Length: 73
Image (cartoon, rainbow, N blue to C red; front, side, top):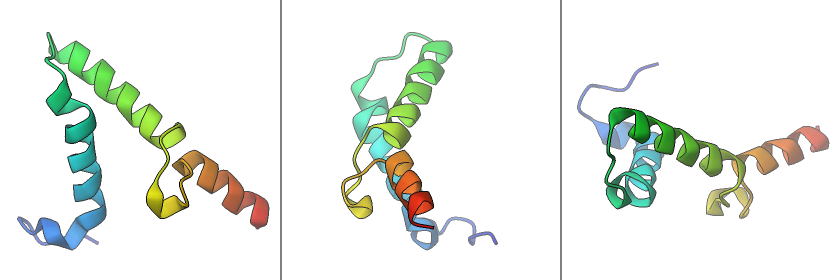
């Protein structure tokens, strides 16, 4: 299922992830090259998914939340 083009309000979750990426990584860095940008953004994504607590997930990282869900199943 796709959202209507040019309607970001239809996909608020990913829009919020992109905003957080910009606030916590992109806008804080002055990348010297595309390779550096790709490396730092990839590292940010790794931290976002494995270490960074998320309010919507009871202050767990997505990895921690998924592990807890799997244990409960």
